[in-house]
Structure formats: C-alpha cells, structure tokens
Length: 406
Image 1 (cartoon, rainbow, N blue to C red):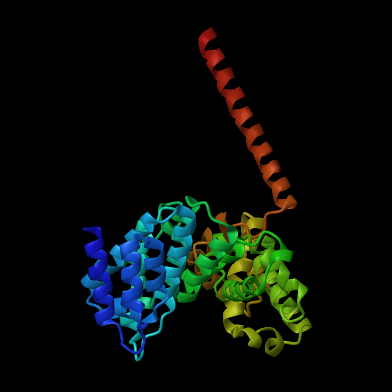
Image 2 (cartoon, rainbow, N blue to C red):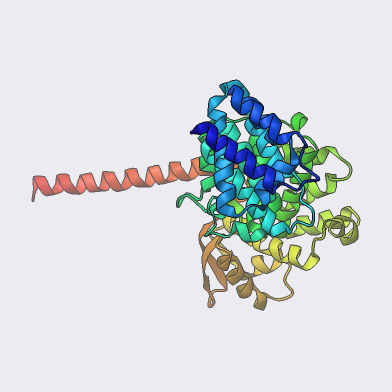
C-alpha cells in the first residue's frame, strides 16, 4: 500500500511538473528507489528536482498538501541523523524554488502551507525554529493579521505582556543564533512600527557581548535606536534597559553611529536642556537628526514629556514655574497642557492645583535606575519602616491602656 502511494506521488509530480524543468530520468530514478525501499534516495531525487517541487506549488491546495504530507512522512523511514538534513533540504527547496511568472501572494501562501505541514511533523525545536523562520520570511502583511496562524503567534500571551512566540521559543532547545534569525525574520516582515520595534529589541537582546555583534546585530541596533527615539513612550518598559545591551553599546564604537548612540543616551536619561546641548554640540539638526530621518519637532515633544517624568521623580510637588523652566516653555500658561500630555502617555500620574500653581505627583516611571536610585529607594523604605514602627508602637500602647482600664 505504501509503495502504491509513493508510485502515485511520483506519477502525479511527473505529470504536473513543467517539462522543461523536470529531469528526463526523474520517474525512472524515483521508481528504482521505491523498489529498493530507499526512502532517503527518493526524497533526495524529489528535493533536487526543481520541476517536482514546482509541481507541488501549482497543484490544487488539497492535492498539494496530500502529496507533500506523503513526502514528509517518508522522513520517518530515514535514520534520525539523516532525516534532519533531508528535512532542511526539503524546506529550502520549498522556500527558494522559483516559479515563472509567479504571483507573490499566491505562491507565498502555498509555500507557507507546505512548510507548515513539515513544521507539524517535526518534533525537534531547532527544526521547528528554522521552519518558522522561513515562514515569516515568506509572509506578506495580510498573513500576519491576528486571526491568521502566523499572526496569532505575535499576540501577547498574558497580562505580563510576554508574546506567544517568545513563550514558544523558550520551550525549544535552540541556539542564540537561531533565536536571532527568527526574530530578524519577524521584524523584517511585520507591518506595524510598534511590533517591528518589539522584535528588533528581542533580536538585539540575543547578543551577549559587544565583540559578537555582527553586521546584522549592528543594523538591528541602529534601527532599534532610531525607533526608540522616534517613539520613546509606547514601549517605554521594553526600551528602558537598551543602553545596557551589548549591540547598542557597539554603536558607540563606530564613527558612523557614535552620535546616534549619544542621542539615544539623552533620550534614555537626559532632560530637554541636555537634548538641545547635545544637538548643538554635534552640528545641529542636519548632522544629528536628518541622517536618521528624525523630526526636530517630534524629538522636542518627546523630550518634554520625558523631562516632565524626570522632574516628577525628583519632587512630589512641582511648582508650575519649575516645569516651565525645565520644559523651556515660553509661558507658564502652557504647563497644564504638557502635564496632561505626560499623564496621557501613561508614564505619569499627577494632579494639578491651579490655585497654588503646582503639580502633585502620584506616580512616575523611573527613566534611569542606578546606584543613586537604589540609595533613594533604601532611604524611602527605611522611612516607611520607621513610620510603620511608630504606628505599631502607638497601637500597642493603646491596647495596653484598654486592658489596664482606669
């Protein structure tokens, strides 16, 4: 029965394949492998014949899936160490075999469909990662919608904000390079700027040392740095530790990207006055912003919001005059609109006292957390500890007084 199915597979591929692409001896070579029970040889003849691969790309979808499923099932008849190489060769053939006059969308869909068959039949994590990487490389934007199989992997897994894809990858025994290739493929294909930035960050997180940061890492680091400057708010938590990433630090070692690294540092830690000083010291907007497609107006707007957050960390109550000075506003009348902008960003929670012309801070993100911030946190905890002890002592004295009576 198995032999009959393999014979029918070979016949179907031979009849459907473009004749100028199919090897003249394809059917004969495959038939010999079937007779000899050589599953490995049969797979190789099909994989190495561009005509046979093209046949599976032009068949009706159901027929193509059935044929490809039969082909991938042959991998179970091959030794494990050889099966991995054959599976990789089969995946490469599906991904790269060119069709004459092919419509990108139709062929991408078909290629991904076939690769998903192979993905579901493989059990080792590295093979799955490689196949998933190929599928994301082939994907067009419409295939990454939330209701599509690939798009659903890009959704958040839980309230903690982790992505389904990262949770999946964490369960595979794969190398850092495999992870980077996958995240690079996603970042290259995903349409939304915010999601693209998120996967750039995941990509550059995979570099653990400046010395191992290759050309792909530097390119991703540049894109991630520009993305963090263009929008420092939406992914604030994910971007807050960027300066400690080796791939980002590597930007400071090159004359081409040293200024970009410096600008990112200002956006991560500085205030508006630091931004203006940096831009002026490095040749102005044309030298600092223009090479990276950055807008001066947007940069100033974001730096004002970030500066407001820094000010809120330093003071629980902030006079309007201090805000106007820090944000370099022409008038204190503009303070309230910037406080509202900062609160709307989600980085700050505060109330305004219009009579006393001050802002009362309830909560603010901490843009930089180093030894000074640890010391401040320690002081605050000690203060809370002392206050709590005072309350407990007073309560205990009250209880003792009630027991003793008059």
